[in-house]
Each structure stands twice: as C-alpha cells, then as structure tokens.
Image (cartoon, rainbow, N blue to C red; front, side, top):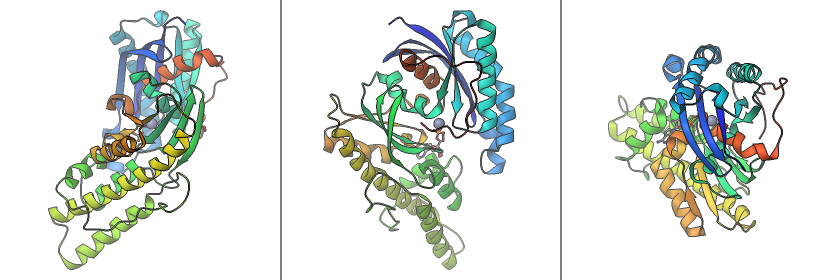
Length: 346
Ligand code: KG4
Ligand code: ZN
C-alpha cells in the first residue's frame, strides 16, 4: 500500500480540531494536530451548551484547518482525502464539521470519508504505536465508557460499558460536590494524594454482576451523602475531609474499572491474540491511580498495557484522519449525501 495524506476534522463535542496525518495502516505520522478547546466558553454553565458549541465550531473550523495544513506544510491540493467525524455527538457541531468537509471535497474533488468518533478513539493505538489487531480497548472519558474488542479497522465488538454516567463525568460532579475546581479529574486526583482511601466505604456498583457493565451514578450519590453527614456536624469540609472523600471515591472508580477489565480480558484472551494488549484512551486514562491499577491487572494476566500520549487520548482530529487511513482499504468513500448522525452506533 502507498502512503496517503489525509486531512481530518473533529467537532462532535467541545473541541474544534483539524489535523494532517500521513502513512499506511498501522504506520502513520501526525504531521500536524490543532485543537481549539471551548471549556472557557462553557465554564459558567456547568456543562457543554450545544448552541454555544455549534456556533464556536462554525467560527473556528476554517482557521483550524488552515493552521493544520500550514503546520504540516501541505496545501489542500496536496492531501489525498478529507475525513470528518459524522457522529456520534452534538448535532450542531457534527453538522458543522460534515458540511465543511463536504465543501472542501466538492471544491477539490478529493474523496470524502465520514468517520465514527468512537472508531477514531478505538483506532488511536494504531496511530500512536501500530498495535496489532485484535486488541482490547477501554475507552474512559467525560462522555464515554466502554470496553471494545478491536478486530479490525471497521470491526468492533462492545463487551460492556457504563449504564449511566461516564467516569469523567463522575469525577467532574464529585469535584463540584466536595468543593474542588474544574476539570474535576485532575483536581480529585491531586486532592486524593493526601487522602485516606479507606475512610469511606463507597460502593463498587455491579461488581457482583456478570459481564462488563459499569455504573457510576450511585457512587456519586454516596459521595454526596458522606459529604452531607460531615457538614451536618461541622461548618464545612476541611482540606483533610476533601482529600479523604477524593481518595475514597477514586479508589472505588479504580476498583470498578479494574474488576471489569479482568472480565473483559477473559473474553479477549479466548480469541488467543498473538500479542495480547489492553489499550486505554480518553481523558480519565490520564489518572495515575487508575492507570497503575490497570497495569497490575494486565501484568497478572500476561497482557501488555498501552496508553497513547494524552494529546491523542483526548478529543483530536489526528485520530479521525488515522481512522480514514485505516478504513480506506476496506470501504468506499462517502458521497455528498453523507449526513450527521448524532446517535451513530459503533
Ligand atoms: O477525553 P476527554 O478530554 O473529553 C471527553 O470527555 O471526550 O475527557 C475529559 C474528562 C473530564 O471529565 C476530566 O475530568 C477527565 O476526563 N479527566 C480525568 C483526569 N484528567 C481528565 N479524570 C480523572 N483523573 C484525571 N487525571
Ligand atoms: Zn471523544
């Protein structure tokens, strides 16, 4: 196969991103990756506001693409294909990205590839490290939580995932409950370092149930109750209370993820993979306590642990361009009838 150069576009949540990736399946180089975050725009609202996100994407896509091409030293006529996230995500942002990609494809005559955002995440280990199929992927972020068996570029089996909140969402909510800043993940992790993880016995929901499903909303409620018990007896939370709540919560999340990872690995190892590997992606994979627990689980099972660099784990457009390079040998480009699918399944 000949190396191709692909322009990728991502706008499905609160990051506007464009990137240029060059290579062949399993051997790719990120020539540029531009990400405009929007958290400053949504901070006062306690969550992503779809209308604000859509407008910001529409305003920033052109400059993201221009900068990505410029940084890669490639002109639009020099790319071989254009790829954009076509779902799942917030409809306004996905439409903005798909329309922009169609415009560029129509103007240049280059092939257009609509890419599933979750496939982009799931294929990231191919981009970062050329990990071979089949591998097991644990995707844990503010919006996603699932175990995926990656058999091939367009072939995934979902083994399970959260039945309510995503873990990143739980970190963010717990941070708010105990008076820490946003984003909650890093704030909770930092506070937890000085905390006693054994002070509160928070639940490990669904741990006794078969399968690989997870639940985090009950855990959040348990933290709320523990906080209320403390503040019923004193003026507010002390720094030590915050640290203990953070550490106990983080231990519960780590245990839940580790327990279900053991189960997912059993299913995966039945496939008898030549180079068994657990890959993680998503912002929560940055958590060192969670990461080291997963590394232990992998070591016990004789499975390699792979975590791509954080810039590729969180939302970005390089993973979208890379997914197009991976999928090209297996599928046709999309036509001008490519539509945005906010609830697109993997
Ligand atoms: O993948 P990501 O950047 O965006 C999406 O959700 O798509 O993930 C962001 C999430 C936030 O909820 C954030 O609190 C969480 O990842 N996060 C962490 C850590 N760093 C980021 N959660 C736990 N520990 C961390 N160190
Ligand atoms: Zn994502």
